[in-house]
Length: 492
Image 1 (tube, rainbow, N blue to C red):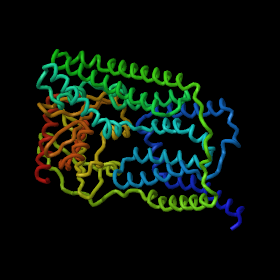
Image 2 (cartoon, rainbow, N blue to C red; image 1 turned 45 degrees about the vertical axis):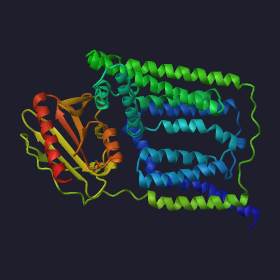
Image 3 (cartoon, one colour; image 1 turned 90 degrees about the vertical axis):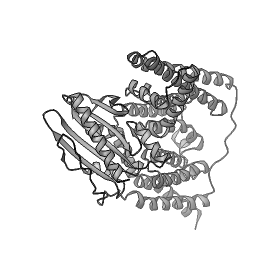
Image 4 (cartoon, helix red, strand yellow; image 1 turned 60 degrees about the horizontal axis):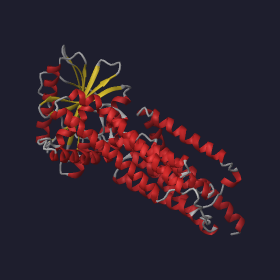
């Protein structure tokens, strides 16, 4: 094979990689775009536009010429990132199945592939903007569930210890969870995890705009920011619990819940910005050496480009197979003995796709219409923690705009989530229930299934008209809880 023909085949293989990449991951790309629309992620869309605008601005400011930016070759570091991303995606898809995690690996793989087509130095400058674009994905509930919950456990345990030191006893972690949930509304400043997510975007934008060299000092600045955010969050929760339980002023706790979060957020960002500026001023006179060539030998490039294309073709067959709806689901049904007559209704295809993850799963839907109560019930039982999700996702997908979310008590130790909607005559109530536990917190449900033998859980979502009598409504919800408990006991 002549050098010219070898070069042509290498180029064909190289250009086939991004095409096959897009085709192979088309279902995931479709999911990403649908998620932006589903979660009303206006902030994420604007952030992505801002990052792309910054890229264009820097491209013009640095006066890059196109012929200097383009460099068609297989380079070592982009290749490593691409291969690791593909392997991580495969492991995530078949063992974890969290789409937002798959999207992150897809994003890093895309970044690696871009490195095959652009100058290595310019490609490295794209790293922070690419991380910023990945961060605009609608993480939402996933952050709070998989990372935020352990952080909340740490916060509540710390608050419990602080209150104990101050001789304020008999306030346990579960009580702190309930009070914090009651005080919180749907707002980015209310969640410690979302605050970390937003501040990370701010941090990356600072080091990109300031052209900060990434080293151990950058890591120190980032760790300082996280420490400050977590410390302020612990202080915020401590003050909320003290005001609510010791001073017995729950309304006051609700009022300063948001301002405290915002103040801690602003102070943490100010500390971070000052640290970055301080380290930048010290490094102004430092010089960077010339970067050695990162490209592989032409012979190796041909083999690797061809192998990568072949791998993506194999991956294509796995990813284009849509998950089938499992028809052979569990036909065992809960027989409700309530004062309200329930009529079973048809379950939609989308509800089956979202809720049924195995042949032993049970899914039921009912409607009720009496003089005092009107609405519907959706009940999903599964032993697979991935078979459930936050009901807010379904409400939003049905076109309902969430106005408020809070934890209420239907009776002692029976806490449920109450969702109010804008311009709607209905409210939603939901909880998760197992043989041992009942919680309105999705994160608690997931981590309980992951960390213990409490595997079988039932999600109950009830939509009831606003004009319903509160006492009658709570009695109805308690009846449903009791019937689900009887059913779970028989089928454990």
